[in-house]
Image (cartoon, rainbow, N blue to C red):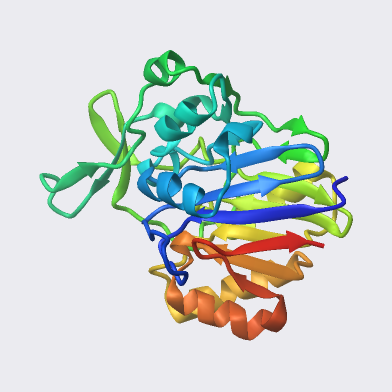
Length: 280
């Protein structure tokens, strides 16, 4: 159990502080009692610039966690590996799958997966710790492993695809993982994009942690294109898990941010680039 957890947002779509860069993506620096963790890495430009401006030394991080294989979450690994040699990187084995955004006309598609292969990262010194199962990576620090989908996700983005044997299929994000940190006030769940769905992700987090409620949720909630009724349902879902604090970033979306602030009041936190939050 960690007596204090600090989250510093190094990369987000939005920025409200002078001198920092905003970038489509997510990157947190998370400090626990025992570890300094890089959670996702954005596309890379914001990580490089903002970490310097915010005076965070990436050479001092202990490990990195990549939530899923989109470029805006793992693109900054090249810079991180230049700062921290032999960096342990925790992720799912499918993190390097071929991912695309395919519009109605399939000719209009673009690659949105990892810009790096496994061989390239290892050449740069990455110590890849790849597994699909839940696991403890530090005292009171758990990875969820691959997240089951017993319920339909709040948002099904049909344009997000994966290439399998030359064919495009809908991406079910089997490689997506969340991070659970046990604090003195209860479990803190950190998500990259929550493509697997909010209810699925939170329910799985409870099963992995062995707890009956979550104290806080932080990260991207993939509600950017959600209708108002879907956002309201997401708010109620999160409340139903006993969550007291919500700190959102990246793909959550402006309408959802406004709704969460209304619902959680002073316990709502918008984690844009340059902002930080600590628990308790």
